[in-house]
Image (spheres, rainbow, N blue to C red):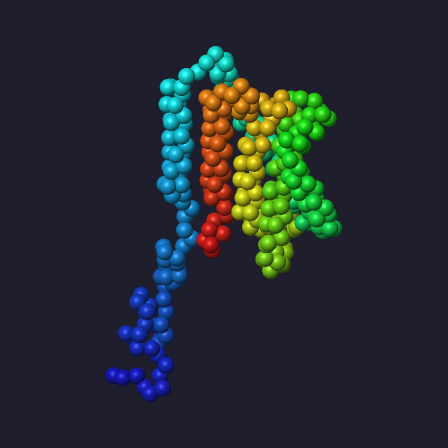
Length: 292
């Protein structure tokens, strides 16, 4: 028997699968409705992945460079001066000093530049941001060897003067990227966070900093590579490092010593930059990955 004219009850074939009719109205069980509301797999945020080329290619190239250097040393004719410069654990000691200079200086750059960048984007201290940027630019615009010479005159020779010079030289990229990252945040997002009752500290730690992470990490990566290069100049202030091998090779005109110091410095810089790229990708907030 057909339904009366004007009836608004949908025909059975037009109802969604799994629904049933109660007193002429279609209903669906709650569990079925929730199951249909679940987004499909392809619509979910992609998982963070690092491709195998990024993991394999650069380390393989660096390993080949080190292997080629070792093979070249096997057939190189080393005189007594070269053998003395490379004897014992001098190479390992110089490499460890270089890593130590880079790690310590980067640590202090981070604990100085990131909090300072945060402070310079808060309240009345925003007016001081241009002055701080000018000072940071002056630190990097000064020739590194001249800066180190001034610090040696003031503090004397040793690792302490070298560390101060490297820190001053590497503050700018982290400081400028921290300020730029925090200023680039969408004001509507910050207003929404305040509107739901988040405190200023909560807005900073849960909204502003996570959104600024990509820019901050890019500055840290730049500072790391700068520190590796600048640390070679520590030898002129008695700070040690791979610069000892390079200067020994230049002053004594010994190509094997110069070659080894240069290759190790380049490999270390590229390796640290590779590790920085992995950290930059792993520490990037998942929400930014999903929307990028």
